[in-house]
Image (cartoon, rainbow, N blue to C red):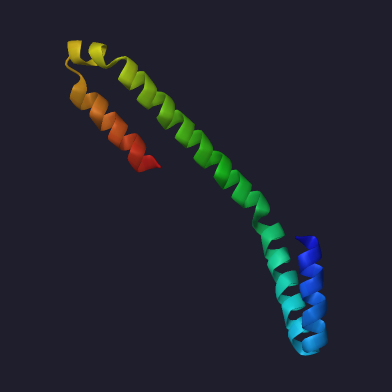
Length: 89
């Protein structure tokens, strides 16, 4: 990939120096933006993964304990809790 990018940059520079300069500026700005938001994105992504893991574990527990839920006639409560957890995501 790197070789292709360098070859493309050389060809672009030979064809049109202004266009090459514009592309370089855009790539630099893009890199600055990505580096600037990397920390907050990683934090958001970690929170999403934790929420998904909690929902998955709750669903597994609910399905494994469905007989117990039915015995205690707590189906509405279990369904409501599941719906609330889905909405939270």
